[in-house]
Length: 427
Image (cartoon, rainbow, N blue to C red; front, top):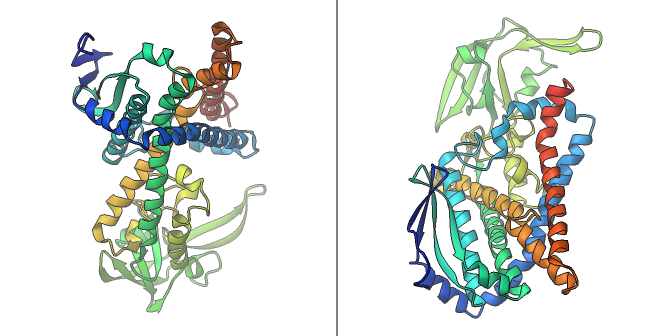
């Protein structure tokens, strides 16, 4: 090992600094020699196709959505989120918070690369060094383990496959653990007060002008307890424009009174075909969620089998559309809840979520048969093993390239589809 060229610092692309060390090699050696390392390696090997299957299933569901009649209308909303939403880098993706996302990304990459090193050592494959990748020389965005490529090529196919699968498999295990703990944390949350939660206030509306804020909980209107504002301010209301209402509100641990909120004209329900006004009712300028919805959001989110797609589709920073009122610890809904955990419940839930989200994406993407990702290399090893020496290296390479191009084309089509509908078809 001493004969290897060892560069402690190496600059890549002008902005990435690779910092190498040999300090953790002894840790990988000890873990690799443990009795459970080889059985764990087999488990992680079997988890790689599971991760790939999850990813391909999710992408297929998205592709089905693209083919549905309503996608043309939804495409404008997707384009409005911006192309950077497709990146998984905190700070570049506007919906991944820098702190939570950065911690999750570094943890995910460290366990991913560390798992490669441990399983490699369990089969006697040499690890040269390990290290961190720093963006702009100071911001950790990843990790790496440098395994002797010659030994990997000469190793038994199953040993090489287990080493390649270890990273994605470990990410999948960590993601599942974080999701289970997150469900337990959210399950501890209860409504801080019984009333209708204010999720949004329109600027220059009667509610805005009188100081009603998102996160307020309306306990009573004109002295009468309420749990759902739509029953008194919805389309079937008996109230008229010009009437004033007195609101009893729970805000940040205090009950306050906001009086003389005057209704104005008007909300309208219009037949878009005939432009005929079907109904008209007074306007106050708030969107709200009922007390029953506040309660049910906790039970729904903490039930892992209720709607598994919600954990991928409804990230805490996306309080719009179908995701509004779904994530109890999001910035838009967290004011409606309390927990025995105290003030730590929100940062804990958010960090657990982003650990889950980043790690499940690392597991899925790295498991796909895209060369030279782990999944692509594992796919190549699998093709060689199935060929039992009867397939030439050229044939194995062609099969691997075909799989890579097929999956990449599928992913590019999914990303490009909304922009095609908006900018080409004019949806």
